[in-house]
Length: 111
View 1 (cartoon, rainbow, N blue to C red):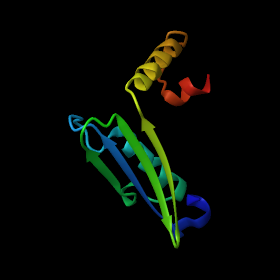
View 2: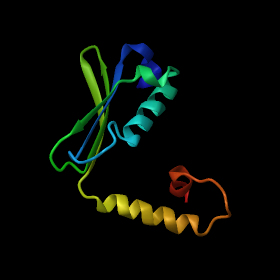
View 3: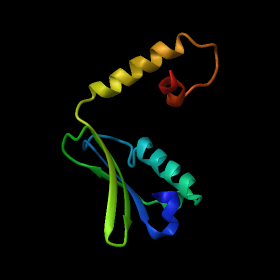
View 4: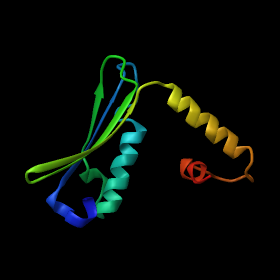
């Protein structure tokens, strides 16, 4: 939607985490804004990021595409911190089988 309609849609990132989370906005929210900006061929700082710190929210991330008479929201909600631990274990299993180098989660998810 972002590339085809270009400026016809406003795009914003909204994230929520528990009230004790220190970084605000989260690294994930910042990365989402970077990816959206790359797709729209515009500077990252043009994508607003909103951070909510409340209660015991594990982690919610939403990218909102809002245009005339419609809105598309892509949301991921973590219900448990277990999902993060499983991702870390998967990354550890990946990295012990690799040659020395620099890797990120894209490399892990390709396998």
